[in-house]
Length: 162
Image 1: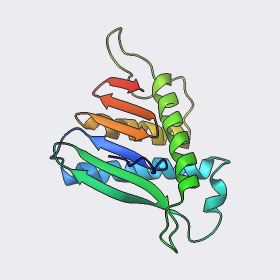
Image 2: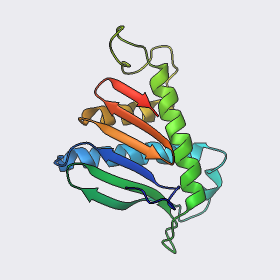
Image 3: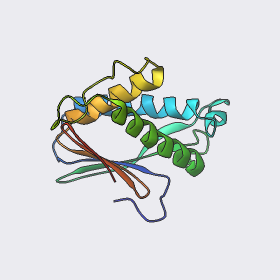
């Protein structure tokens, strides 16, 4: 769904066409909070949030059918232009942080995927956000996060990075 010239877009694909509005609302709120946490915590992107009004995470497009595809990016709130550098740096770091978080979780069995929350990881705002995102994503039948050539697919306990 992402066009070739849009390397600054994070695409979220839900593998079902009919999803409760309450789930979409909760998912987007959770994603927005985690992505903003990544943006304000990273040295590469923190300066964008030092000035007012701060950049806004926007839903650039949504396409539905058998799947729902939502494309996200950061926008300048004044001139309404997409901020490709902020979006690229934030989404790349977000996927890194989510992957690191899930990989740090204990595996419940030889055949199971990652369990929720690691008891060995100290609680930080970032780990709390990633735990919330992971929990929301796991509620969907199957979900895929795509950014540039990277992809994270979650289906129940299965977590794959491409």
